[in-house]
Length: 433
Image 1 (cartoon, rainbow, N blue to C red):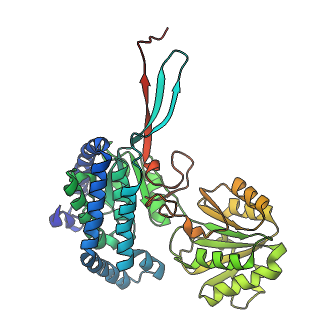
Image 2: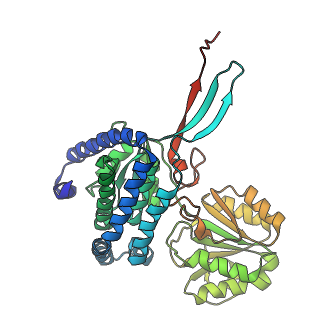
Image 3: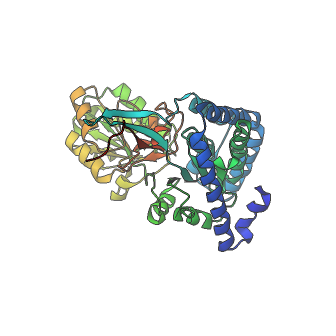
């Protein structure tokens, strides 16, 4: 693949890109068959070898990332964007460990999900099977290349990876490591394909389905990317449009616990989709909890946009507008609102939320159970930072994304969510009357 193909994005016509993408789709479709039949040991061998290659090529990965970072900084990219793009030795090590973790997980393919016998003696099994070819379209985060490739491989799916131009160099080296793992295990290199061009037309071709060879599309990126994918895709999509995440501090919240949770939920990494964007404080505890929470955030360098009661706490608070309650900042900014009670908190989340992740901080078990039951989000939490909304933290090894829809996959999309199922029917000669 070539460097010659990488030049297509400036010199090729739309027809050239379409032909290239159809070829990638056909090769991935053929590879998916081989992966579906590959043993667990062979798949694990490929993943472990890829992790070793990432460790061995840390210097190359960091040099490529430095090039991507320099280009992004020259474009004036925001700090949150740069944080998502940046790699350092610790993040490279975490990337490699994530692959080892995936290799250590149980193989979902072939797992018998249910068995039942009919009155006529037929024995029916529901068995997990791969989805086929998964197209992943993503921006900025180069580690997605490793996570998505390994998750698809372990679950028996071929992957077509289309990273953003901003992480082009980093993703290229990481993909080379994945291919090295495939070679070491004797698996087809097209099992994890990287689109070798940055032309936006390549995304359009993937959304069309590449002649029926793509079975699912997973977008990871900003609102504009996800909206485009959901609007144009002709194949099923696992996606979330926004992460408008809430943390609600209930009257029975322990203040020390609330301070720790809110600080981490907002500021650990403000640019990830699990970062809290709105803090809701119950009026019944506002006198004791609101000021410490707001001042903690302000003193930590977070801009606070608050309603009228919040504004009275500290002159540094910026008045919030209606738009703020429905904004995913992905930055060191948070909106803060005082709500009347648990009912009002749930109503606010239902009105402004995106069904991604929401948390209640309380020592009241009944209130927590009600919140967890009634808030209709993919992930609901009690007394824990919303930044745990992550496949790796769920024990999935990694995730290919977060899904907020209600069909097939919801929440972190890991190995099990990348499978479908078929029925195996065992008979002894039965004929239907």
